Amino acid sequence: MDEPFSALDVQTRSLMENELLALWSASGASVVFVTHDLEEAIALADRVFVITAGPGTIKGAYTVDLPRPATSPKFASTPASTTSINHLERSARGVLVQL
Image 1: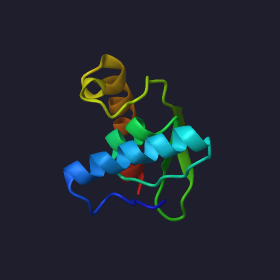
Image 2 (image 1 turned 180 degrees about the horizontal axis):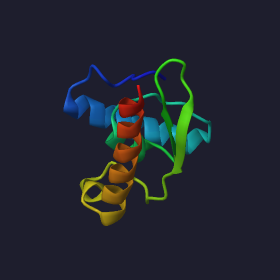
Image 3 (image 1 turned 30 degrees about the horizontal axis):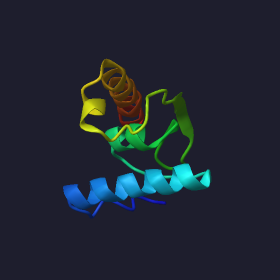
Image 4 (image 1 turned 45 degrees about the vertical axis):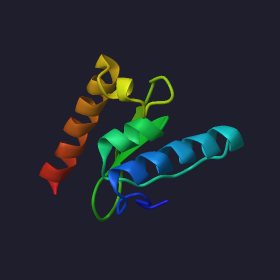
């Protein structure tokens, strides 16, 4: 899915993220979700790949080892989530600097 929630308001986006997590948990299917929102990536993923601009290559792959549901208000303020977000931001910033 390529940024399926980008045009949604905050409330609808949160509902859709929760619905995606519920469907994903129930089905066990693999999902490739493209987003520019690092917090969204961390909240929805078990693994996050940082990809460079054209030609797209994988700059880094990161395992997200946080409890579910990661979309709860408590998630955003945990040291582990803050560390994950900061680490991915530094990696993504490196991609932008190299372009």
